[in-house]
Image 1 (spheres, one colour):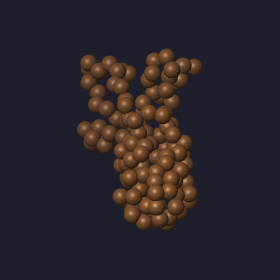
Image 2: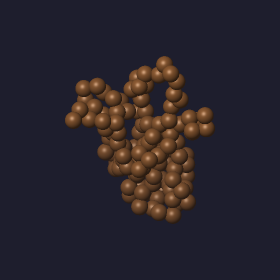
Image 3: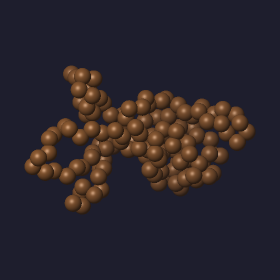
Image 4: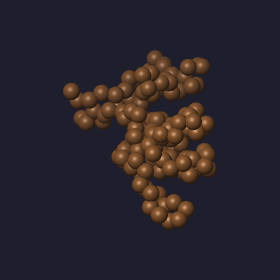
Length: 132
């Protein structure tokens, strides 16, 4: 039960979802609609880090539901990129950038780097394998 309660583990920097088993369970019938994925916001201006979790959460919410920031982002100790764990809807496209208006109403185009993207089989629409 302890393993199931945690829900999501990471193996080789990829999410591993733990679900409870029962005798009537049919394998591959559970449809996954979203997954937590680590994203990087390279070159994000330091002024957007100033608001801490609130500012970065607003930016991250353009991709999905922000879950947490990594330690280096929280401590502002590695400023090459901000790193956020975001629950991303798998049905949506994965944009290469997001756009938002800054405090002076200037449009900012922020690049996005996904540390991992799930693969999907085209014929069966399930995740984790390809048609090949």
